[in-house]
Amino acid sequence: MDSPRSVHPDDLRELGWSPADDLRFADTPDGRRPGRVVIMHGRALELAWFPGDGPAVHDTFELGRDLNLRPVAGDWVAVQDGRVVEVGPRRTALQRPDPNGKDTQVLAANIDTIMIVQPIDRPLNLEAIERLQVMAWDSGAAPVLVLTKSDGCPDIGAALDQAGQAAPGVPVLVTSALDRQGLEELRSHLGPGTTTTMLGASGVGKTSLLNALEGRNEQVQQVGAGGAGRHTTTTRRLFRTSAGGVLLDVPGIRSLDLLTTDEGVGETFADITEAARHCRFRDCGHAGDRGCAVEEAVRDGSLPERRLESWRRIQREQAYQDRRNDPAAMAEQRKVWKQMCKEAKRR
Ligand SMILES: Nc1nc2c(ncn2[C@@H]2O[C@H](COP(=O)(O)OP(=O)(O)OP(=O)(O)O)[C@@H](O)[C@H]2O)c(=O)[nH]1
Ligand SMILES: [Zn+2]
Image 1 (cartoon, helix red, strand yellow):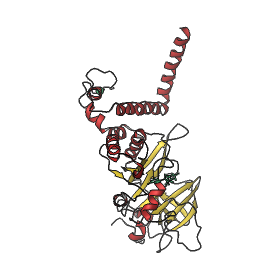
Image 2: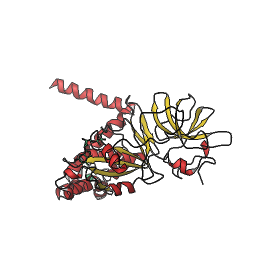
Image 3: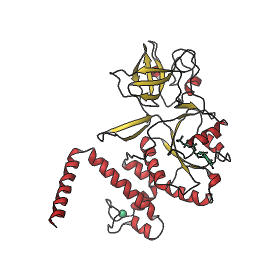
Image 4: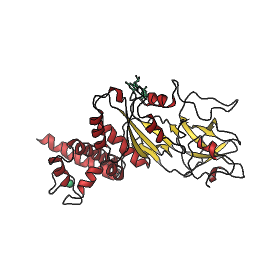
């Protein structure tokens, strides 16, 4: 229904299009053609797009100065007369604090599923799981926890228990590229019309898992690479899996730099959110406050202390970010620090 008038939906699916993406803005009788941003290189933009009735091809475009939005990987755009003329509305947006500290930076758009990839052949990094989860929830995508290298895990049951506590309500997959465990379940999360990205540090096993899934040794085939005589790419940032959905490889989102909102933290720490409903005070800080049900839950063992510590760390960072984005609050904080320094010197 919302598919463009001239590009076949099957071809659009090659790029991860789902009916939730309304592309009518990008396929018009006056010659607009749809495309999807694969990656940005400064002011150049690599696009998989549909110049004609055939399948997608890859081309590089210069970024115009009058675009409605600065495009990012995953964006749907309209091409007209050899230029990118409009960036479509974003269903989801993965963000992090801008490295210049002033603003936020959108890293990728229109991702449906964020796979948080962590190996279990060593102790689980629960805080990484929690942080990436906050990012995922905040983006609007659904997180899925993918545990890798299960062949090297001495106690999968224990790993699952831990993972379940760090990611309440999130699907958890146990996989091994070596034993080919969990591949069918993985496949079920990568169906047609979905865009997925994998988050996890280098070496957690993302590439191996993908290769096991696709049953090949080399990288998965580039989407839309078939355009004859067109510029070919060596980067493989957007590829269609045999399950039908596409994987978007977004550079620069593997760091644990956090941009958090209360909603994302609340979802990730659903157990703390739930316990906090029973705190005596609505603005309870869960830090020595009277009648704090969260601290009570830690005492009676129903909430792991590690969870509360992790929550506190993320809260502190969030407070720091808020100040950084708010010059008045930052100035206020500086005054407090100065005062503290003076007092420290006096002693
Ligand atoms: N035992 C075991 N080792 C694995 C498995 N999957 C990956 N490895 C090993 O883990 C190492 C890293 O795997 P990669 O797939 O390259 O990890 P990656 O997350 O893609 O890393 P980057 O590409 O750097 O982001 C390699 O030495 C793999 O052989 C597995 O299922 N079992
Ligand atoms: Zn409390």
